[in-house]
Image (cartoon, rainbow, N blue to C red; front, side, top):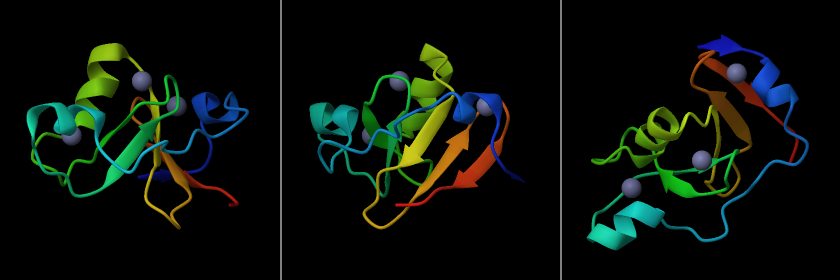
Length: 91
Ligand SMILES: [Zn+2]
Ligand SMILES: [Zn+2]
Ligand SMILES: [Zn+2]
């Protein structure tokens, strides 16, 4: 992974945090998840690639929303899919 801000991340003014600690899509289908990520385009919270359904990545690809932030308590980082860029930020 690249380290550092890409243009998508630089354009984010306020980082969206999870409203609820659950994957919006897994809840609908009764699935389990491992970690949660919040889409920085629309604010939806979905599950990570270690989860069986990988909803965050599927959402990013299907909607074209580039950046996710970790929704895990105590984690402060973002990831951009098209740039494969990773950056940590201050709480
Ligand atoms: Zn980017
Ligand atoms: Zn999910
Ligand atoms: Zn989104």
